[in-house]
Image (tube, one colour):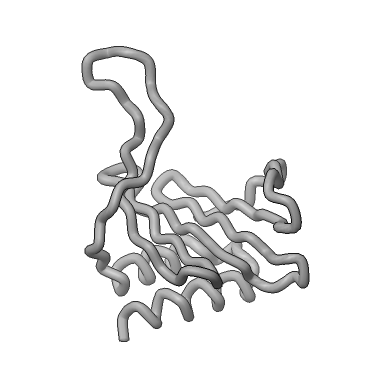
Length: 121
């Protein structure tokens, strides 16, 4: 179940950030200066092949694979980075999100689900 992380650094001026975490999924939501949703990032399949679905008012959707920075040769872990990955099973991601989001604010769940539904149609 997604649980809110209470101590989140808001490094971006003018935006408030909330982070919800589970072993298989993360949701980060940013609110603009007026309090409305500005953007979100939904990271899913964290235990398999992690992907990130990002949405913002300015640029819409992007879908990325996550390179977790693990070094197969045993070296130090590097910073995770996002790489292009166009395919997404939005219906599957939406189902997983709904299953894990019972403790997330209803307004956040509704907003993210509406955006996920717009990908499916």
